[in-house]
Image 1 (cartoon, rainbow, N blue to C red):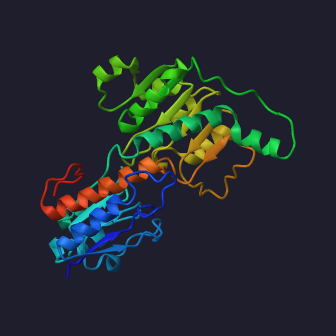
Image 2 (tube, one colour):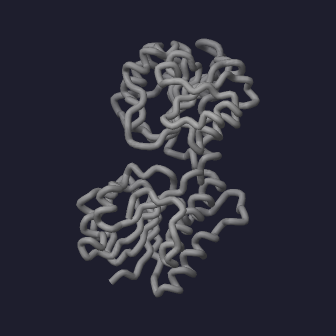
Length: 329
């Protein structure tokens, strides 16, 4: 019997730091809509998103608000209406949906949605902070100073007046450009479908990926999808003083190769907004910064993702068109 809305998003119920006006509104929206339709809301926000979803966890669910847990074809094919299951909607809490087999979901009769732009500003801010920290070798300097040691190693890199390369000029990439406007930088970008009018208005040059890798002093990735962008060929083009930042998807970079490039002095440093899971690649002493996927983890980011995903569920229940569908159900 389809009688549940399940919330798996780990930060959906978080107490927010600045207590913004929108805090708690998404939860209330879900509860009120569920009541109108004779459903219950099951908050499972403590579920570990690194664990693949199983069919039994979706029993009786008509809609879920998903974190980064994996929804594969075997589970979706059984959970959807095409096989007599109850699940009709997966509302992704955030932008990326690589963890969901959207084609299998469509075949099973399950609509998938996301919340594009909801966390663009926080992610752009995190990108800016990461670039500054790597340019200044913040982590090595902190570790030395915390032990009472004076400065050792090379000077910081200048940022102002240098070249910024943005790969992917969507919601986050355009925000990054706006945040860097005060740095008087030359900005170049590789985008699969560039908005050349926007580029011209903001003084951004549209170039190919090899040009970004050759000419940019700071390279930041803001693309969707599940493909590798930076591998051996791209790293070989970069300057020894190049900074690479990946606040998008782990898969976009061959992380083992970029580790070796930083270790061997072939690029200056690397930042990744993902947990560093390579035990055989220790970061001690290297200008590499990892963070546990917190680019969107601010009050603004959370409220926007909460409201966007909740609106998707409510619109579904009320029979209204979805604002951000990602598959063709």
